[in-house]
Amino acid sequence: MDSIEFINHASVLISDGKVSILTDPWYKGDVFNHGWKLIEEFSDNQINNILDKTDYIWISHEHPDHFSVSFYNEFRDQIINKKIKIIFQKTADSRVVSFLKNKNFEVIELDENEILEINESFKIQIFKVDFYDSALLVNLKNFKILNTNDCPFEKYSDLKSLSKKIGKVDLLLSQFSYAAWKGGRENIAWRKKASTEKLENLVKQSDFLKCKKIIPFASFIFFSNKENFYLNDSINTPMKVNEYFLNSSTKIFFMKPFEKQLVKDLKQSDESLKYWEDKFKNIEDYIPVRYEKSFSIEQLKEEFKLYKKKLIKKNNNIILNFLLLLKPFNIFSDIRIKIFDLDCIINYSLRTGITTTNTDEFEVSLHSNSLMFIFKNEFGFDTLTVNGNFDCNKNGFSKMVKSFAIGSLNAMGLGLSFSAILKPRLFLLLLSKLVRVENNLE
Image (spheres, rainbow, N blue to C red):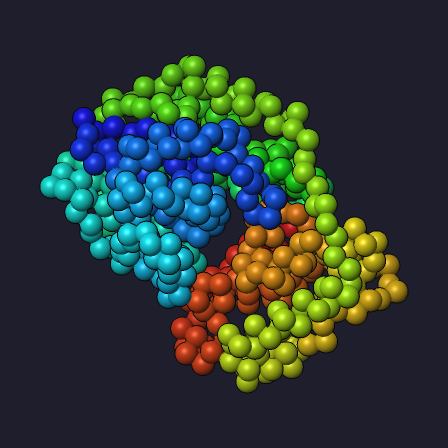
């Protein structure tokens, strides 16, 4: 019988009774540089029991709450011995696929819109979204399940295009709460707005896809660091989502871990709603983690030199230098950053590096650990915008994006080049996201 079993966060197990596909396994440990934790974590025995039922694993994108490197390192032997195949989208850099193949996993790369026929009644298809995300369409004997995880299907044009591609959907799985920085401690208005927008977006997706059944998921986490713990004050809980849809023709189904139901006969259990509501209430009692290690100004300066060398290697030096001189656009402009654990303010510039300053004014405030993380990892700035372990004003955020987003692009296999200039779609997408954030910071 065709079934769906909720596992955790963005992970479900979909089966036709013969073959099963597991999505986005992440079951323990914190992610985003000690910024997020799961509301519910699993033991090794529980994880092994999940793998015993799994034939395929699908990874939606590279974020660590969907592609958990520690999971593939720790359970490598079990996955290989059980001959579980891993499915991932084709990307420009093939970084995820290369990592998996180097671990001797069997990997299937899928092009966008390519259909993989698992058997005569079980087909899957992926759709690339935004910078690096992807959605999964599962077709079980013409019963369509769409897993959008945290794909930003928010614009009417994007939903209309998706609807034309796949038609009516029978069951939708989608994120139900915000999962990134929302304007700093004082900007509770943005966080409340973001929560409401997530609920409105579930309605939009349901309407465009003509889907009357939704399993809200991919939001069973909380912000777990001392620097971002305040972000939990406006997150959506299962009870809040359930109340929002109470008088709607669209039905909501929250499932607790290891709850299995028939896809065509879903029922909402009061026990499952209470289970999650109790778990979310326990967030208030959690003692946030702190960054225990600080890095000196000298250590930051040395790491910056290596960071800059990587940027020069991965981007066209002529374009890089031209942008450094292009004053009107303020790309790579100086940023005054307060390193609060060192109790100092620095001037940061890709051109001149890090210099200490005597001014009392700053545009960005963060821990030295966060700045070091950006220097050490191409995806470091992307991580910072997700974990929210910083504070800044509108001008500071704009400057951070213009200075550090180049690392995020490099992490996706993209860079500043003459060919990229002729294909500006991703750069325009980045600009649109920046404008949206700036509007919410006003």
